[in-house]
Length: 422
Image 1 (spheres, rainbow, N blue to C red):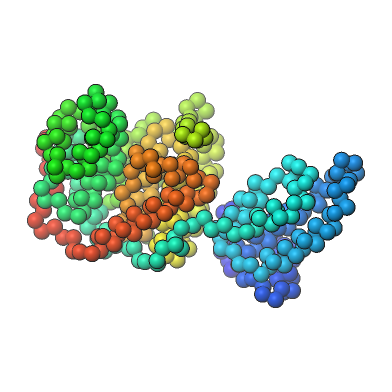
Image 2 (image 1 turned 180 degrees about the vertical axis):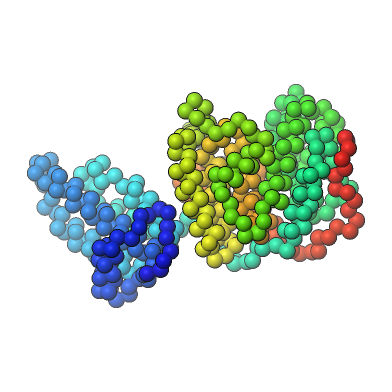
C-alpha cells in the first residue's frame, strides 16, 4: 500500500488491513491499495460495528424488538456495499468527505437509522468539492514574480503615512505598478474612510475615485489631505502589510499557518490580539446565520489541522490549479475561524498571498470589503467554498496570463514613490 498519510484518520490497523485485502482479492475489479481507499473501508467497518453495538444494547427492549428481525436482510445489503467499496477508487478529498459524513452520522439519534440503508450508502458517494478540474490545466508559475516582489519591497521600504497617496499620482505607471496599487487599494475599507471624512463622499464614490486615479488626481489629493492622521497611519500599515505578504516570502519556503498569521497581524498593526473567553467575534449573516469565533482553547488543535492540510497540498498537488484550490480552503478556514479580534479577512488574504508566492504564482487582487467575495466564503463554508474557489481561480488564471503576455520592464518609470510629504 502507498505510504501516504492523512491528518483526518488514525494510523493503519493491521486487522482491518487484512480484512480489506481479503475482500479486494475476492472482487473482480479490485481498487488500488491506497490510503484513501483503506480509510473508506475502515469507515464502513466502523459503521457496521456501531450498528451491531447499538442493536445488541436494545435487542431485549420491546420498543426495538420488532426492528431486529430485518437486521439479517439489511446486513446482506451492507455486505454487497462492502464489495462495491472494494472496487471503487477514492482520492484523499473524497475520503476526507466520507470521514466527515461518518462523524456527522448519529446512530443513537433514532432507531431507524441502521435500517435506512440508502441514507447510509450516501456517505460513500464521492463528493467532489473541488473546482480546479473544471479548468484547463495550465502552468501559473510566473517569470514576472521576482520583479513584482522587488518593486513591492522597494515601495514598502519608502512608504510613509504622508506619501502613500503618491501611488495614485504616478504618471509612469506600468502593469506592475498598477497591480501593486490595486493590491493596496483592496485593503481599504471605504465605509470607514467615508466616516472619517464626515460622509462628504459616500463609500461608493470614494471607491470609484481611488480605483480610477488617472481621472481624479486632484480629488485624491483633497481627500487625503482631509484624512485624520490616525486614519492615514491605518492605511499605511494596511498597505505595508499586503506588500510584505508578497516580498517577504520566497519560492519553496514553507508557510507556518498560525505563526505566519500572527506575524501578518503585526505587519498590519493589528495589535489587539487573539480572542478569549471574554472577547469573541460574532458575525451575523443576512440569511440569519451566525458565525462565532473559534474558542481560544481549540485554536492550536484546529490550526494544527489547517497546517497538516496545507502541508499536504504543498507536497502532493500535481498542478498549480489543484494547489490554489487547496489554498482557498485554508484561506476560508482561517478567515472564518475569526481568532483575531480585528483584521481576520485581511490577515487571511495576506496569508493566501504568501502561499501562492511560495509556489511562484502571482496572487490575485482580493477585496473582502466586496460583499460578493465575502459571502462566497460565508454562505458556502459547508461545501468547501466552491463559489469562492471558482471566483479566485478565474482571477488568478486571468491575472497570470495577462502578466505573461508582454515584457514588463518599465524603461520610462521614474522613482515610484518619493520620500517626501505630498
